[in-house]
Structure formats: C-alpha cells, structure tokens
Image (cartoon, rainbow, N blue to C red; front, side, top):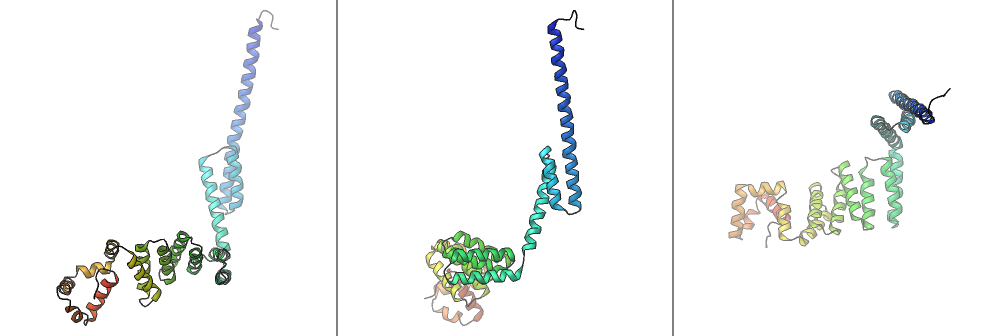
Length: 275
C-alpha cells in the first residue's frame, strides 16, 4: 500500500492524522461545554422567574463549573442575596426579641457581660429595628472597655430612633472614656436637647468642658446653629459688649427671660462665664 513512499512521509501522515483527531475531540468537547454552561444558565434563569432561588443557585453553580461566565456569576450572587434576605426576614420575631433582651438584662445585672452580649445580639437578629438591644449591648461593650464597639452600637440605636436618649448618654460615656471630649460633649448636648433636665447629660457635658482646651470648646460651640444665631444677633452683640464693659449690667439683662435663655446657652457652650 505504501510501496515507494518514504517511511518518514508515512510517519508524518500518521502524526498529522492523530493531531487532526485530537483537535476534533477538543472542538467537540469545547462545543459540548459551551452548550452545557448555557443550558444550565437557562435553567437557572427559569427557576429565578419562578422564585425558586435555591434551585437557581444549584444550576448556576453547575453552569459555572463548565464555564466561568461573568453574567452567570452575577445572577448567582443575586440569587444568593435573595435567599439570605428571605432567611433574615423569616427569622424576625419581636416577641422572641423581647425575651432575649430580658435574658440579656438578667446577665447584665449579674455582671455576666459576654453572655449578655450574646442575648442582645440574638435580640437584634430577632428584631433589627429595636434600638434598645443595640443600646444595651453598647452598655456591655463599655463595661468590657470595648468603647469603639459601644459607639457603633449607639449610632445604630440612634439610627433606629433619633429620640432615644439613652443611646446619646452611652455614646457620650464611651467617647469620654476614649478622652474624645469634644465628641462626647456633642453627644451629651444632643441628650440635653431631648431632656434639658437630664442630670447625667448635664454632668457629662460639664465634665467634658472641663477637660477640653479653650480652643476645642470654642470650635465645637461655634458649630452649634443656635449659638451661631445668638452671636450674629445685633442686639445680643451689644448686650455682650455691655456685659464685658459693665459687669453690673449682667443682673439687669438676666431679668429678661429671652436674653437670660440666650446667655445661659452661651454659658453652657463654654463661650462666656459669669462671676
């Protein structure tokens, strides 16, 4: 059959044939892979439309095992987020949240702060919109000297309820412990806006002012819109100048309730002092 054909040529023909066969197998395999990843992705899309997200995840993963297509990966992540959110929402139970918070309170009273944190964390999972669990967990973190975590929880509590005074008080205490007196003073000031008679806020505010430098006090005070309004009021400017020139005039001005309130605000802000 190969009479007259050199052996080298016959060997070359054999190698070329095997190469062509190998290329065909790879081409078939690539074509099959392409068809498989697309088929699995289409099945996943169909399950997504039916809101069968777990089944969609299974088939998107099968698709990705054949080919790492970015669009399929994006859809997989979307399905996983939906599953995680559905799981989170199904876990919410305000009644169980109250039970967990009460258990946390019991542990807190006994000084068992790590256990209290576990119960408050569970309460948060059961009712993420309740500011009390965040605030109570912040109190535990403060006891354990984890002041940054305490501040973070106080901020979360405030997001849930901007009128929740305990969150401001506990934030102030944590900031005070970190010697961030200007920020602590601002937190106590927020508490005083909610309850001007709150003794804890009054004491915290005064302590912070005592530890701040005059420059820090003035810088913080001048950021207060109410202080800004008082200082830019032409009538108050004249009164303050007179008080500086004639100290005896102070008592006369304090007889006017409106002026007295403004002067008290400036005293609390640390901008003026009356002897």
